[in-house]
Image 1: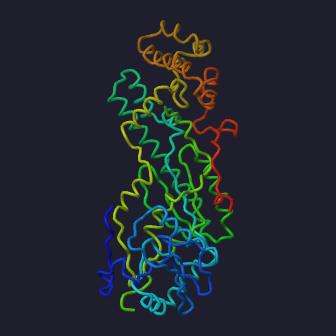
Image 2: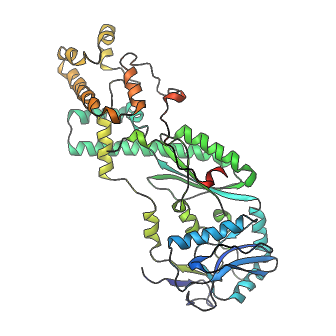
Image 3: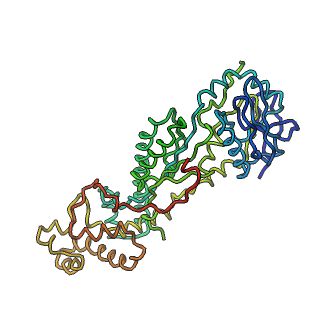
Length: 261
Length: 172
């Protein structure tokens, strides 16, 4: 794999490399007073807290190179999990660096009000991510119900050949996907009212549902039960998976600092 | 060989790292004066995260599975025996289908014959056959039109979910 390049968003940081001696890997921002995570961070570095203006940032020495390795992704996630277990947290995206500790502290000072407000918004909440993938378990019903599919199937039986089979299979795959998408919309319609906020992610032909829900921790059980009911209800069309509770990745403002502030 | 019925999943599974990859990589906070290291190879990683199965191979498996279906006992339109009135519909049985078909028109035989072949193939693959499909087939000759399009299916008739690995996240 190629060495990572860096992108700076301000003139001062452009060209900073990941191996700058003072650079810090930033995991997230929490209210001051949390315990430093015991889990080692990215590249096995110990995680420490930098405190300023009632806030603290969890950081570790930036590794010489950052790559999206499984163990580093897991370390990022584990550090955030441990912090989120203690209270509200603004998780950073993977691979965010601060060029120097003083730059980080000054940022916390400048942004304190805005960051504290965001912490309040996710206080007592968790993120649950629900994904749904296409299941063709009901395709037999679909072929029987859908006049066009059924006729195509019978025609293909009378004159079976490779092309006809591909056409038939493709038509069934389209039908199965359409049903799964419909089920995904229903699932979303049932789950969204249980959440404080909902954020939809990208979908494709296989994964037709990808949504994050911001839930009050006390509603998590009820939410999971609702997912169970939906999963049974549409299990032959859509396979649901639930991940969480997660740090609220999807419910923090990605760029909290208005330019020139 | 894939038996599509086996893929029916009725309980949500607990997510894995791959399920949250996009959150860790694309969401979360980025502060302007900080630096986001651009990660070479990240797109490849994301594509690897899921298996994309829209391929001709999948289509052919669908077609193959479809060709094993009993399309005779359609839930909506009339079945072939019914087109010929009550007496035929009541006397015709699975075993007698071929014999009866010989006395019918070529067009009808066209429709019935593939079904016969399917039945024979079915016998050969019986051990792999899914309970649900067996149950449906066992019933249909006697009650060809008894199933409404959106039939309420009692619990015992539902496909069973396979036992799923439970993880600590599931119960929290």
